[in-house]
Length: 212
Picture (cartoon, rainbow, N blue to C red):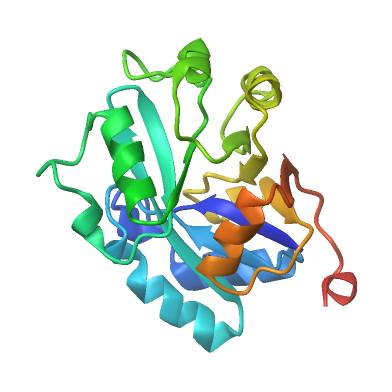
């Protein structure tokens, strides 16, 4: 099954993408699910979960966290109690990873080789402990950025994730993650990633009949 593991909607407050438009586009592309990773807040994505239920489409929720060494995808929290720092940006990467892991979640660096000023992980990714996976395929990245992430994941012996990083409907599904064991909720998502039963890739849309 194919899941876009890095999606944003209007609840990230940096775009106007309606959840319904995202979900219907994902369904039309033959995706099996999407993970909504709004910036800074897990709780912000709650309305999207209901839209997914109404549409009969798997919606899971995580968060994209801005740290002092780049952006981090975190999965498995239950509320915004993970954030004990009282601010949204430049949180201490290693401490955030430890906090998410302590809560039973998992972390993966988002677009680690995209240069976003001083807060870019780049090759320092190899020195960080506590990641469960690496986002190797990001729909907003250059091919070179993604190739470097693939190489880093291989060097670190970690599974890969793919996500569109969509902020508009046309970007949905540019990259996605193929899971080789069933995912039906966040617990099974985390179990599959920990088992390495996933791989990030550029996503090729599938006919709806084939996706069913």
